[in-house]
Image (cartoon, rainbow, N blue to C red; front, top):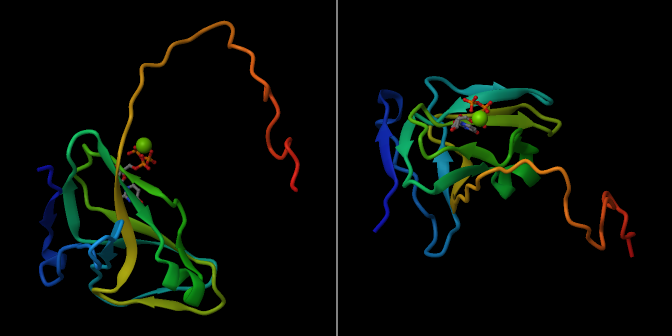
Length: 148
Ligand SMILES: O=c1ccn([C@H]2C[C@H](O)[C@@H](COP(=O)(O)OP(=O)(O)OP(=O)(O)O)O2)c(=O)[nH]1
Ligand SMILES: [Mg+2]
């Protein structure tokens, strides 16, 4: 069985490992590992450490996504959502949070700030060509098929 290996850094030793909150959850919640409370002002972005290092099985990525409750209640999302965690990344997993709400948002140690979904990755060889095949869509995009 494939496994996600997670190492806790010193500042996350007191926190539980990420885990699926319900039996069929797609994501596992990520907790903030901060020495002191962090305030994110409206419009501000901050890198929030998780205190975790991780080794994903080869052929997989982790996507760092917002939590809907924080989004609707506080306007908190991830600036780069979905953040991409490469299977070969061994640095500390971090969350780039941005406050799109109207109030200061305080992140405390242990708060579940984001969620991580593990997904398969497909890599393809890239081949340069002079011509591409023709399709019905052609170069139409960005609303070319209308709205209704
Ligand atoms: O929300 C995120 C996004 C990325 N990362 C880490 C893991 C990922 O494998 C690495 C690189 O991310 P990405 O490829 O998105 O950033 P980059 O700006 O392209 O940096 P690099 O040149 O290191 O690839 O940073 C995080 O910890 N959190
Ligand atoms: Mg990159």
